[in-house]
Image (cartoon, rainbow, N blue to C red; front, side):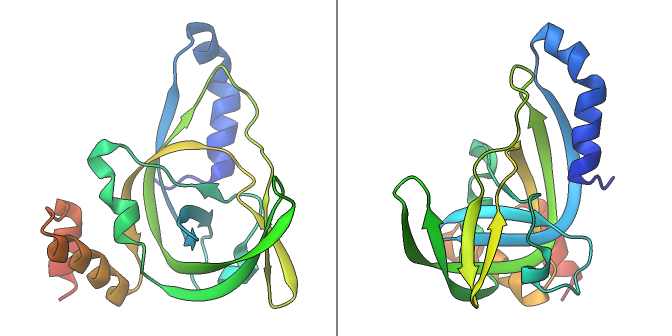
Length: 185
């Protein structure tokens, strides 16, 4: 089932009060299409249903940082060198300075569990400001606790690069990735 961030937030608002009284975590498994962004090592997901849109046309306040658990810790490493890349300028508000960073990105599908900390109700934090081609883009404004289950690049070559990462390092290839690679041969 594919859910947008807005559907998830709406569900949290509907069910959050019951869970809040029990002080438990509420999580939803979601499957979304969009851009995976590597901003100098920080992995961010920008939801976007339209694969034909350029990344710069999709950046908005729905992007969030990806996180993993111990079982899936290689997913974010395996996408480190996948996709197109550009050099962008980032404004660091804590140090009040600009610095250049490599921004790489690719389009694909994210399957993740989105958790809602029922003791906290604020999801927004300071956005990152990226400057590229003399334009300012603000993203990574949304704070969502999540656990990545699958990262599936749309481009066949990116899938192979991800597969190759596991094979070259001698790691076990996730079964779902093995199936995709053999299906796309």
